[in-house]
Length: 338
Ligand SMILES: NC(=O)C1=CN([C@@H]2O[C@H](COP(=O)(O)OP(=O)(O)OC[C@H]3O[C@@H](n4cnc5c(N)ncnc54)[C@H](OP(=O)(O)O)[C@@H]3O)[C@@H](O)[C@H]2O)C=CC1
Ligand SMILES: N[C@@H](CC(=O)OP(=O)(O)O)C(=O)O
Image (cartoon, rainbow, N blue to C red; front, side, top):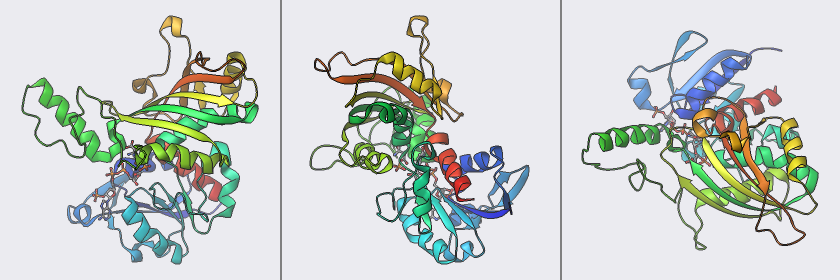
């Protein structure tokens, strides 16, 4: 297989930095790396580290995509919307982490463990789903295949780094300020203090009272699993955790599915690790799932509240949203493009 010229749009951010690691770890055939970021980074002479070498950051602009085979997008919706069509015009195929194209009819939205076959229908852009959606769907998929998923009730506990480098730095700053009993000051990018707190808002609210992040679980979940009628009720909460999102998921099915059957399916599922011995205090936690690629599942049990005869289960899962929720999933898609 010939080596590829790979550009990373947003190479200095949380996701872009992880992409460099994932490309290297997975032995992706990168012939030339083109790390792209803002004028701030270029003027500061920033470099990124790739395969033991420092590679200078270049300015993200249309001409930077000349000769590029694959673009991994790790920038804002606005920047992706502006620059990725320019990359496509120049012959590149893009795997984008932003929300800009996810629901476009001609853009596949892909979790490779679920719908890798959709990649073939791309017109130059494949979208990577929302991180919380990926983390929930990887374990839900084998259960759906066995029993027919109809409804989800989800609560997410999303790490500060989900809000990028700025979110991670802010949690660190606030934690130090609390410990030193200093004034908190401005809490940007969060609307409220996150240290020693929970914030039940990620994104803006719609007229029904749901946030944009909450609606991604429904809208992106329907598209990825090809389940247009899936019913989803999601609540997304920002928590003072550095890395790794956690989710409590209750799922209803058309056909019976016992806890034991579900456990067996999850143990055999790609991308999943069952960590479930509550009596011994063993269950997934974000500290343990950080910096690895599997979605850990535990606290698997029958939904006590389900009506007589209904088929419903509840579980808890955690996954690294920067890895499987973003960079690793994108590199997996790029591997399929090869
Ligand atoms: N963080 C996460 O857990 C997840 C993020 N995503 C998505 O991935 C994308 C990247 O997120 P994340 O890595 O967290 O964000 P960061 O804020 O950490 O990084 C943003 C990147 O974009 C670059 N950038 C910002 N402004 C410009 C500009 N004007 N011109 C060129 N480059 C610019 C930055 O470069 P510079 O350093 O020069 O400013 C940096 O490389 C977003 O779409 C996000 O929604 C998806 C899933 C999970
Ligand atoms: N919004 C997510 C991370 C993210 O960037 O998601 P999206 O790519 O859907 O905007 C979080 O804050 O945890």
